[in-house]
Image (cartoon, rainbow, N blue to C red; front, top):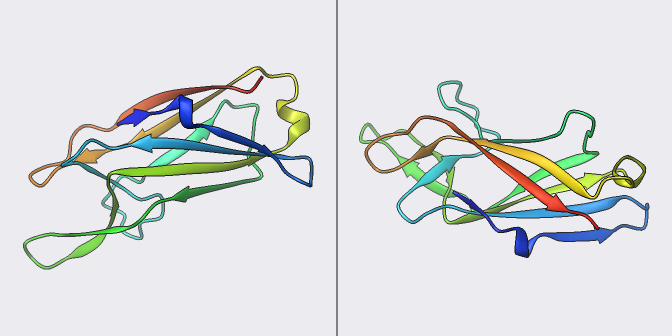
Length: 126
């Protein structure tokens, strides 16, 4: 799992909030769970910011891929790349030059799932 800080976009919205888009890349041969699985036996992928900042909205943007087990059960996963889009209130981030967040995920391949990991993310706002 990689985070490409050079491809982060920060856009000022008409509401004077900020739209922040964070790009992530998954190595070939691996996938992670989506953020909205309805199955309780999987670890969902989540993104959180430092405690003092609550996004107005958050959305995972990805092309879903179907993953199937030998027994025929299938579900959607994220592979290759995805983005996390956050809408942030400008007044909360106005004094910050660096925004810190954390991507929690569990990578899997065609054989097994690996221990969950947390990828720290830092974005320069100014």
